[in-house]
Length: 244
Image (cartoon, rainbow, N blue to C red; front, side, top):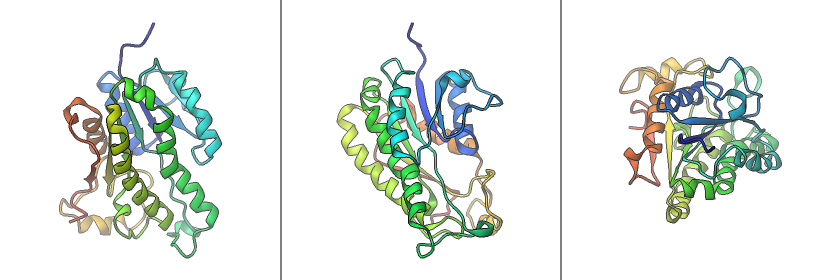
């Protein structure tokens, strides 16, 4: 028997924004499918658990393409929302920022496979299911996609800028299928991957504080809900005014 609940597919669910997003959609009664390079952690406090998890290394294009069938097997022909949240940002020795001069070519490739190529591979591979549900796609970009950031590396920043442009292209291409595509660009969010020195950035923000993962999840929820039914092709800044 088909599950009557709406379904979200989320990459990068294990911590931070992804974790908060699972909980946000869970409160709304959605079924959440998660993708991660790690096996399901039984400590994750959401329904469905391992049955709703697909282990896949999004830095491997062959594994990403192969995962489409595994995901499709967990769907009932419909996918109401796809949130491309997974992202990687390699660091140098001691956590140093990797610039465009010193980032290894293989690291560029891995970053772009996870941050840029995986979102379109998943959306394109599941376009029939997204269209059947008149669903929504949300790509998670970054403040670093529009300005040089003191901690985010060059590969991460340029991959997020490319993802913002891809969001526009996807909105154009998926719109006739009834699928909306938007992006959110978080700024300084209080997660486990914050770099030392972030407090200096926060001092200069108009709102003078870090964002909470739940505040980002609320915007993701809005963009996947019927409340944003006429919104597509946009990138929403969630950054306390860091861009002004």
